[in-house]
Image (cartoon, rainbow over all chains, first blue to last red; front, side, top):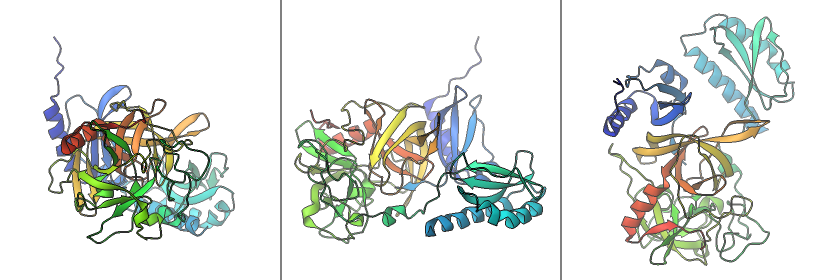
Length: 73
Length: 369
């Protein structure tokens, strides 16, 4: 019997919104890291990226990356 | 040269600021700063060195970081006993590039399809011959309101099921962040930023026919898009031949790792790769911050030797560009935000579906057939 838990899209949406409330988080998206599904969190600067305390989402890895602030082009 | 020097000072200052605000890497800081100052004149005598800074290595030791234009530039391993690390940064240019590189309007050939296209000017920042190639500079002419001096990009030509043709771009490009007046505001090519901030009626190529309002109240947005009615005589269906040509009418959903390309007003043709999908993102507008969901993040790529390295995919003025797959030119997204590291795009299917409902006609990307 598998212990894997399916993540509902609505849960994922709410989780992303929760991450967006953390200081310095500019964007949260679904990506691939080392061949596996992950959540990628984009920060505005190195300090916020390093200091952020991120919640966990079960077995889904959360990858931090630096993007800078995002504006219209 | 003026901009290069400014870039050097800025990068050094930023490196020092970041370092002074971090809690790690205290070992040898003063010594590294002293060595950097002492050796800066020698570093900058080496051709290809564009900046220096003080940083920390993985072990937490202070090091001198030397930024170079290319991998071939040689730097010493140590300076006054402090380790020197090379970082290939590429050339550093000023951020005000769009204005600085503004060209005088020309009368080149648009090469946008429908009327063929021979040699001639295809610089997207100039006034192009009609029908205008997609990826060109556009802006607005608002007869009954104040006009700003700016430019964005003509994404592509859409075809309605009723035969009407439309220009696709962003709300913030041709509808002024919700302030557009449907039926009154006009789309001009080039945008006024590329015409010495002068409005000319002869530059009109379309009339604003609809836009999706952007919400600034914390509610989710899904697209930043607008359409303007146009004709095949005014707007072509293809990018210039030296770009990628015509987009396909068959759209494709983005996936992580998908190779994509775009042709836009500021950075012309660039290549990239989808980095993340279903992205939730806060985007800064003139009117404030707006939350978007289900977006695509793209990172630019360029060849360096045998490797693909990260590069800039878009800059200010590229908003509105259509993003297509490499190879088959299948539309994937509508570019609307980003910075020099990442680009944000609306999924093209969401754009077409929403605008079709708004306009009461089934819209598709016009491939000329």
